[in-house]
Structure formats: C-alpha cells, structure tokens
Image (cartoon, rainbow, N blue to C red; front, side, top):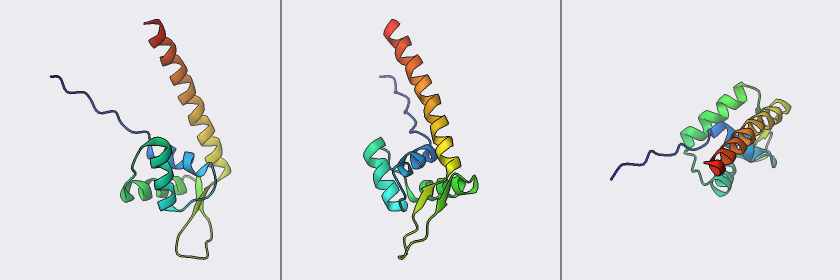
Length: 103
C-alpha cells in the first residue's frame, strides 16, 4: 500500500498570532489554545523559538505580569501581519475549493 505523505501543520508563528488575536496569553495558554482551535501540539522548543522570532520582528511583545508567567500580546504590526496572512490563506482556500468542485 502506498504511503500517504504527512500533512504539514500550519506555521507556528501564524498559530501563535492567531491565538493572541483574542488577547494576551502566556506560553502554556497559547499551547492549550492552539491545540483546541487547530489540533496542533506545539512543543516548548517550537513555541518559544517562534515566540522569540515574533518578538524580534516586532509582531508580539511581552506584557508585565505580577507572577512568574510571561504573557505576550499582538502589536499593531502583528495584527496587520496576521490580517495579511489570513487574506492570503482565504484566497488560496477559495481557489482550491473552486478547483476541487469543478474537477
């Protein structure tokens, strides 16, 4: 029997931006949220590596917290980046759904 190719999960950065679109969250809350809405389990290395890259790009920022958890939130640039990425995904999805329907 031929082996099915694995389907790659969405970009971790996109998943984190999507999670933070509902408000600030710390790492564990982001992980739980992503698992709930995308069915993707982000490991700590993937999560915090992506968080570091998003921070470096100015798309998210850490928020002061009274406890040891470090919440993050979207910046204005992060919101615009998420909106652009979603627009591209919507165009791709719409195109593919139309093509599949006519095939």
